[in-house]
Every structure is written in C-alpha cells, then in structure tokens.
Image 1 (cartoon, rainbow, N blue to C red):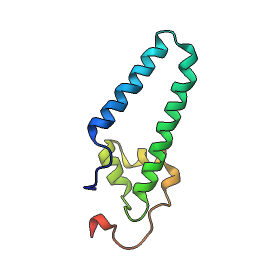
Image 2 (image 1 turned 90 degrees about the vertical axis):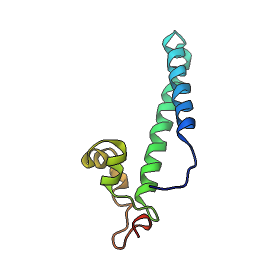
Image 3 (image 1 turned 135 degrees about the vertical axis):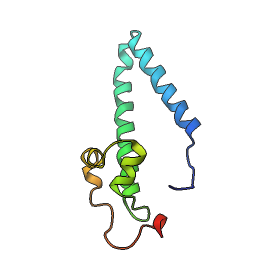
Image 4 (image 1 turned 30 degrees about the horizontal axis):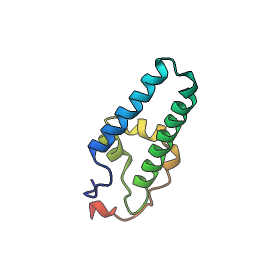
Length: 99
C-alpha cells in the first residue's frame, strides 16, 4: 500500500456523514433535491472508476487480487465491476511497490 496520504479516514467519514445527511433531507420530503442526490451518486461512482483505473495503471499497477483484498470482495467481483480497467496494467516487470 502507498504511504502517501491525500485524504485521510476522517475526511472520508465526514463525506459519508454529509451524503447521509443529504439523503435524510431528501427523505424528509425535499423532492427537489433528489436529482442532486442522484448526481452525487454518479460522481462517487465516477471517482471509484478513476481510482481503480489509476491503481491498475503504471506506476501503481496493483493486481485485481490486491484491489479485491482491500475492498473485501472477490477478484472476480472487482473485475466485473471495473472491466474498463482490465487493460490498465502493463504486462512485464514488477510494479514499483513490489520492487
């Protein structure tokens, strides 16, 4: 795993609380905010896609199994969820974190 920290667990927890609060606001009857909540879900999905593609690509080149391990799912589940990242890992050589 990388030792570089750009966002810490406290920041991620804050974002989860903010998203949950927004969902509760919509659930309490703010129907006009529903499209914004759905747009937020799309943004999170796009961020996940970008993160996985970056982790698969050089210089990171993490394996499907490494991604599955940190997510707590099977390798096949990760490969199914992010098929676009399949070609991101360059064949040959060791990734920098395994050298």
